[in-house]
Amino acid sequence: MKKKEKTVTTETTETTVIKKASKPYDAFENQAEAGRMLLDLLYDDLSCENEVILGMEGAGAVVAEPVARGLKSPLHIINDGRQPAFNSEFPLIEGRCAVLVDDGSINPAVLDLTIELIRSMNPAELHFCVPVFPSPVMKEISTSFDRIYCLVLQEEPPFCAAHFYRNEREAYEKEKENRKIEETICQ
Image (cartoon, rainbow, N blue to C red; front, side):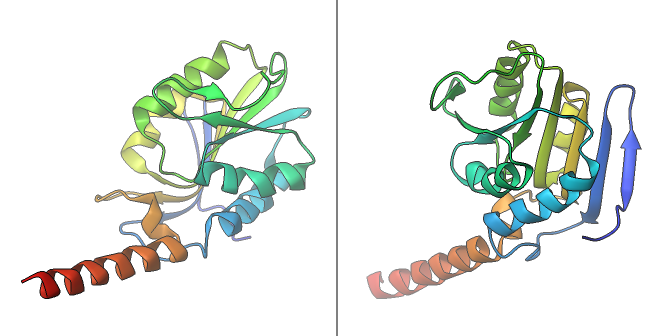
């Protein structure tokens, strides 16, 4: 794992950023690789014990799985519909370190509701772990967490987490090319 580029401490939150980026690039092969890279960062740096990993449904769960497995911690998936809720049984979070993991594509409004849901369960600490995230949103949410871990902080728009994953970017480019072919055929 690369050395930390920046650790910023605000009044309440310490944020670890490994790299800053002005535009998307292939930072990760896929979400599972991003999860393994987050695990490398957390393994040496996570200061809490008895943590519970909370993965956002979909790609966030793919990132969270290697983190939970590597830390030997339970993993619970949060549905990220209009009102965030847990997929399975309600996890015991009270008094534990809750580690929210996402792939970076979470909608800020859903993130706010998810934070509210988790905070209502009285965790000892709430950490946020994300492979890539937009800088403006990070600034907005920083006081909502006790600790934030981010591998790549994107500083300039357009913000699209999927473009940092090689598999997603290739799928997007292929879809775009297919649309061009379809447009040509339909004319």
